[in-house]
Amino acid sequence: MSVIRSLRREDREPICQLLVETGVFTDEEVSIALELVDIVLDKPDQKDYITRAYEDEGEILGYYCIGPTPATQSTFDLYWIATKPSGQGKGVGSALDEHAANLIRSSGGRLVVAETSSQPKYEKTRRFYLTRGYNELARIRDYYRTGDDLVVYGKYLT
Image 1 (cartoon, rainbow, N blue to C red):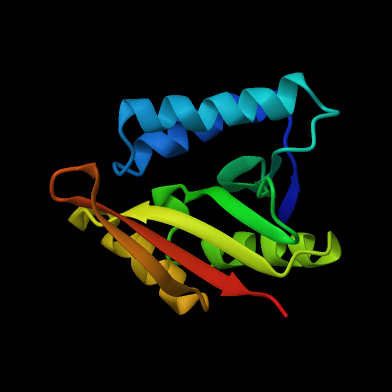
Image 2 (cartoon, helix red, strand yellow):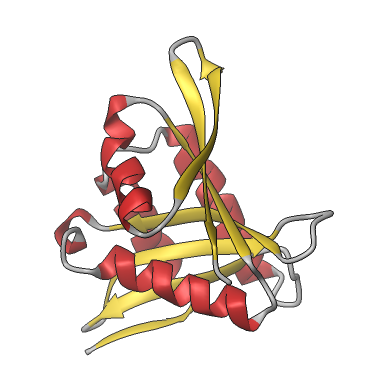
């Protein structure tokens, strides 16, 4: 049985593994993702990051991390959403995105913003956002490095 639930300490290593297994994220990006996981696990009272895991029969197949965007009214950032390769194409990412959207709505959120890279290895990510109702809102050329643009997607929830 599949469930999307709050993060547990024992989820850290499976999340690390799934981030590496995607073959998309650099070591630095995995480290940044785990920093946010650690904040959620080590500071349960913090309000900057909300993280949920997708578990199926005891296995973590995906997760997301969202948070209210500082200095905005009802805008949230989708910091991370990732699915283990064995769970891709099976609705795990869509279920995570829908769960995040519902959680954001219930918190008074109206806009979700997600940022990604223009590199070819992120093509599936960009396609995912478009199929899930996000629109490309902005593109900043050579943002990450020469030839690697920042692509900003957004989805209005109202």
